Length: 265
Ligand SMILES: [Zn+2]
Image 1 (cartoon, rainbow, N blue to C red):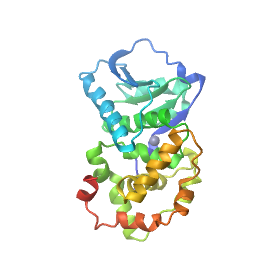
Image 2: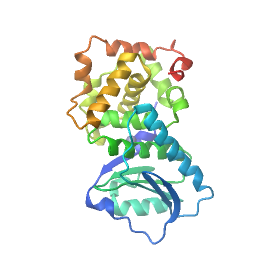
Image 3: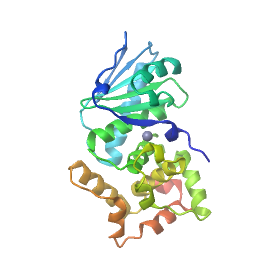
């Protein structure tokens, strides 16, 4: 099965360019710090958009136990794909083919998105990247994308309703096994395949919803990065543990595990 979102979304890291965002007129939607939302059209219900980023911020804190930085994130909404492409292509030519975009600048970050059926999911994904990059000075690509995908859905649905869940459960049942070391070697989006996005999401799901040892490992790993200390590769942490992460990963996704079990944690 092909995944759509993460193959199409993109994270860019820029320096000076990100601080320029010229456009004749933006309509003010509001602020939910660190997000400041503006649109190129009059929104019928701007509070609904603000509620999405507010909920994401809450889910981010609750799920990852990280404190969002107040470093500003400018969110720009476009009524249609044509205007979005025209605006984005001037600054990030490679970004125009993506339905949403996160751009990391030196002092401020940007999220661009246009009206689309998956608006909420894509907005949450890119804004999750913004929160992650604001809080963590460095983050492996697999973990960055795994967490952003996990945060696409609100907390009460994230563990049990993501489309990747059925894909991973089916793959595990058919004998597929994860390989975090291999995944960690992929450090650029150009080399990141659709299956890599799926495996990244699955590792995050396991590390958030699995046994106590897996949850502690993720929490400690993120805290180490948050404190700006060298964290190394997570696979190295796993290798030195007596806990068998690979075996537990497979057990975690065996179909017998119930949705209710995950959602209660
Ligand atoms: Zn992403």
